[in-house]
Image (cartoon, rainbow, N blue to C red; front, top):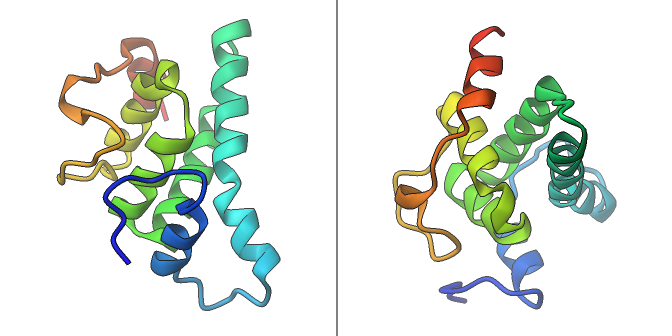
Length: 126
């Protein structure tokens, strides 16, 4: 099956195609990993509202997603599921992890998304 564009109907199938977690024992664990995008969105939203950034928690979620789905599929899932207003934050974290895909993805024009300088400063202190 081709996944030229992700949508609500094919996102789970796309994720399952690339999912590699030898420790997984149930479908619930797959959904838990896929739903990490919800936690990341919540952390980004809280940062925008309060200025409190839980950068280590964001990094942990992103590392797990890239490990279990692979870099390119994780990027596609993340940029599809996370609202455009947070793409700058997302790109900044992925660049810091060296986990931003070099491939063009239909979910976002990665070249035109700016990096967040405030987050860069926070991540450099880690």
